[in-house]
Image (cartoon, rainbow, N blue to C red; front, side, top):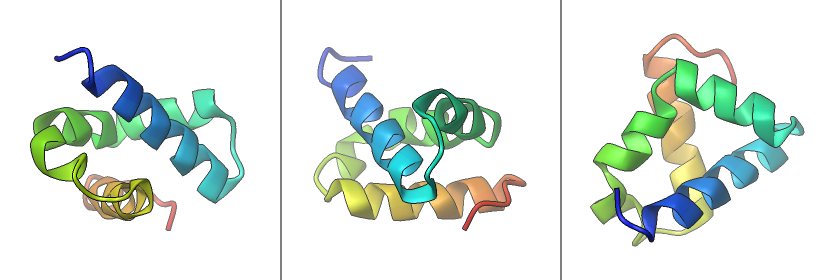
Length: 71
């Protein structure tokens, strides 16, 4: 993981939390459980070139594909 990935992942977690009106901790736990964090790590090179809103949309799809329920 690079030094740039951590602030980016943090920003995505916070944007996800804001979208669903949940705490950042709850957002992290959800994203971790349903593979959203791993998605951000694995696809950082592509995802960080998009807007944070687009990344949140991608996280929603990723988590839904892994058993999550938020949409």
